[in-house]
Length: 76
Image (cartoon, rainbow, N blue to C red; front, top):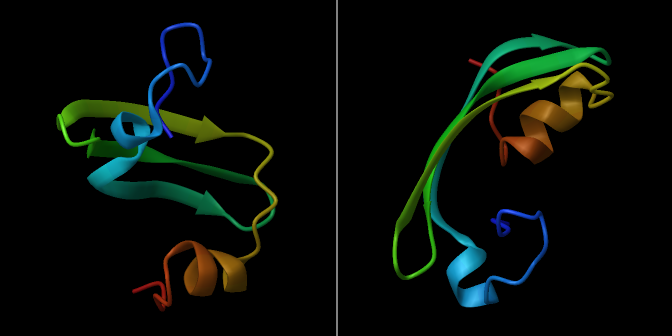
């Protein structure tokens, strides 16, 4: 979900839901950390969004990461 500049959900749902995008994980340590980038578009208006992220307390395990988070990927 994309929020306004104050981090609130004031943007209508139809304009705040991702319509396309790519999440790239550049580093992953099971149960510890994850970092990467996201580039995508939100809503019917196709607002472009691009950012990097660093999760220093990422507790997602390898099986969940590959099967759930990546929608059935195998990690290759």
